[in-house]
Image (cartoon, rainbow, N blue to C red; front, side, top):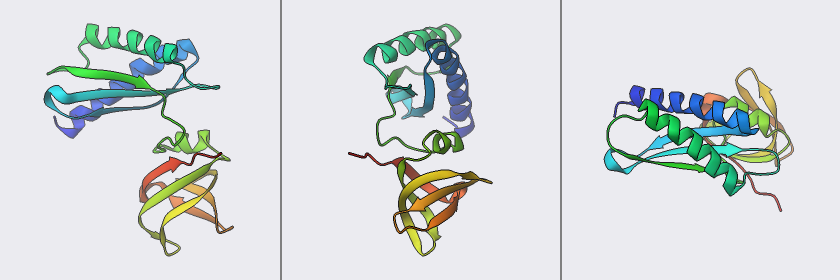
Length: 158
């Protein structure tokens, strides 16, 4: 499946999921389409204040699944729909993710070094002009351009 087609499917599914989630007071954290052929998995990650319940996942799965099937949004071979929480060490990939998690600890892996390091840990302090502002564990505040972030996750805190 070409990348553009995969991206357009993900965007369309995200729109459908966001409409269903909004009615339930739930936030769609992310949508991804993985695999190929008969092994495709469409994952929708949802979140809400106080945490996501199994019932929340079931409701969103039923509502979104019905629309996806009726409109044949995911063409071709069969696929598996999964709806779950993004988890406590959730992936951060969009500016809205970083803004949603201000004041929390995160771990960032960069494509190239900033300040001599490719891995940074610290507290998320903001977004400024397409840069993530991180109060590093070393005590200094750094700004990392979004395009340099290879991988970012929240850190579980005891």
